[in-house]
Image (cartoon, rainbow, N blue to C red):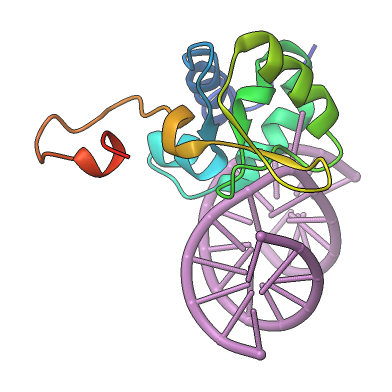
Length: 117
DNA sequence: TGGGTGACTAAGT
DNA sequence: CACTTAGCCACCC
């Protein structure tokens, strides 16, 4: 099979694969980890390789999973124990406040804003 | 070489 | 809180 531009694609897959269970990352966050803002390009990679990566651990900046994939993501989130926030009507979204994973957290700065609710 | 698209984001209504 | 508009980047034909 093809060896599509393994530069950008390979890095995206590596970051997604580095997300631990019960945690999620935003498309922009993955792109930022690569030094780019191509959140859309990340989505393209997921669309093509989503069958071999934990795509459900990658969500939008709002905490919603990829459109038309929420049902699949929900099963994974429930199985992985990812913290979710439920809204009336049955719609849900990932609690980024608790589930957002950062591959390179800054030890500096007393960021209690995300540690003391 | 150029143009169009998309599993997105941020800001405004 | 939900929907709409404009902007950006990488990939495909």
